[in-house]
Image 1 (cartoon, rainbow, N blue to C red):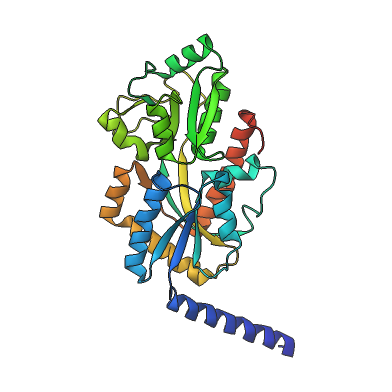
Image 2 (image 1 turned 135 degrees about the horizontal axis):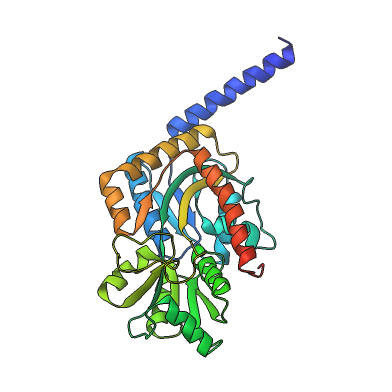
Length: 322
């Protein structure tokens, strides 16, 4: 072995030992999980449940850092430009995958500037109306839109979110003129529905399930290809007359590019262990969230496939690039 080769080998061993020692000491201070959503939505609730578990398991505070707006770009940029030391994590979602196509330019590369850590969960979306609305079905939405073009307001949260894209895909497949309005978070959307500012809302099921159960909102359809078990009488959009409509959502955890593999492996193991706990799984089910888990490689494959999928949705819905 040449002197140069010996130096490279020694340096590699030294780096590996340093990374391993760093992983054993990690975390030695608080860790933040950044998400591009306001408090109160399913992303926030799921994140707080996860960070509580990681705090207990890893002996340091894991803190939720809400940075809503710009379709999750603010949150993603914050993490992409942070130190790759495991102390700045991102709740990565469908919105991040969609942004790759939806946005004309991004201040980061949605693939190369991140290290995938673990898939976290999947969840359904629901189409809802206000309690006193006369709209009781997807057919009613379409009939009202046809009778009064541009008079019907559809609402969702953040531009670029799964909720927003599901709304835009609905508009495109319905082929009827309907207005689209976006809000910063679930509470604002619910208030708009109750005040008839918008007549129809598209939201993740978990954050509005209590309002549906209490009768404050009415669920008229779920967006995935199957009915939700807790709402067996609520049809899918496919059943309601739009046979090509099928939307569901997911989230996971990522860090900045070049996050050391020992840190990634430690976090992956702890995340999977946390969401495997029966009490955690039950609390997630109460939020209409299905824990998934998996490897960093699973998360990498998921992100790549979802970038392709949501790119097709943006094209099909003819959504203007932001």
